[in-house]
Length: 193
Image (cartoon, rainbow, N blue to C red; front, side, top):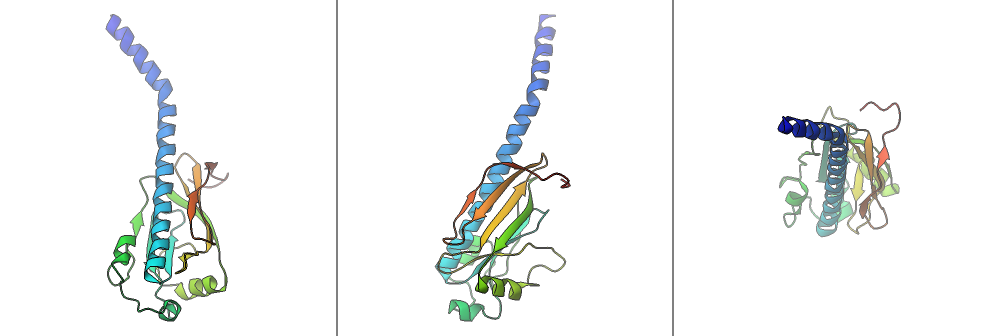
């Protein structure tokens, strides 16, 4: 009888504490995934500086897919001053095959890209316009975040969210191409999770 009473009390305590534990776990997963995206942005920046080529980070809003690839537009060789072949195996580190074709990567389970903002100078706009249509056919991709040979990037904010309506921004600073994860926000009202 005493064992049943103790087990009942443990079940009641677990029932009351489960939402708090589950919420903490979901917040941890979101922060971990934001760090995954920040790491991928850092790899793109490093690849651009190492190879002397412009690298592109793109993602699917309301999806969980992203990719990093070298820019292969008409002006790519002139911009970089190098051939568009793999250099020092860097393309393999950022998720491209030896021919420079991007392989898509997935966010951790249940986390998705929300939206983002990207702003760039004249060369960034030119590259983004020349790059339209080079992503996978039938897919909707956000405007690319560009990383240049000198370490600069386009200013950008990329947001990821979970099913609980929590959202984290990842900011890319254009001046030096570094990125950081911001503070937890709520998904805007009316946004379908």
